[in-house]
Image 1 (cartoon, rainbow, N blue to C red):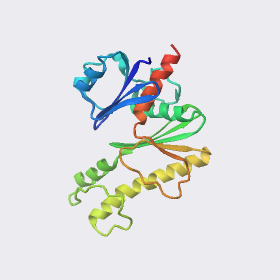
Image 2: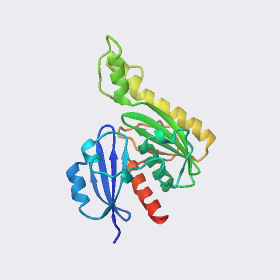
Image 3: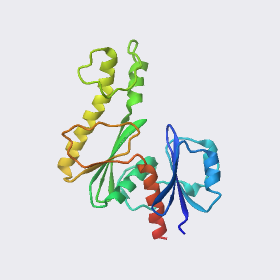
Image 4: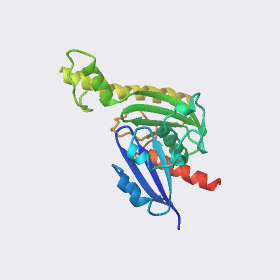
Length: 236
């Protein structure tokens, strides 16, 4: 019987995990706690962790070899000038995209605390972008001005906004969509057949002009950790 694989994503806002045996997901846990870790690791299992946030109590129980890093053997190449600074979640999602289709060029979109967009071509991670996420943009406009209120996001409000609240929501929610469409258009021209995988915690509304094949994969970080464990097992 295959050994259990425990894949943990310590993110900026929450910690989640999935337990796999073979290709089957046995359990998905959010939020993932120390008690969950103790329960699962009471059985033999392989552990791999993507750490972008902080969970000191859990981290005290992990070994240094449990963490994904730029030095972990991967099925992809990291063409990045400062790989030691590269977010482990970005490494994991690129690995998962490659596993989905190793011959396709990929644009990997993740809208959460921050917006990241990464490019993977021929199994080579070429880099990408990081910009503020929805809540960060809304909070920044409230914090750094004297008169703008703090509002919640609303993707249904369209330009032109008829109130200050609507104008802020359009300026954040709709503008992120236009940003993404611009990058998609530019990268599609360079890399025909570009596919998009969206692992965002916030729903993105892609415009009708985006004709690329789009895959929604909310657990892409965890899937990439699983793929990395399997890759290393095959190459031991």
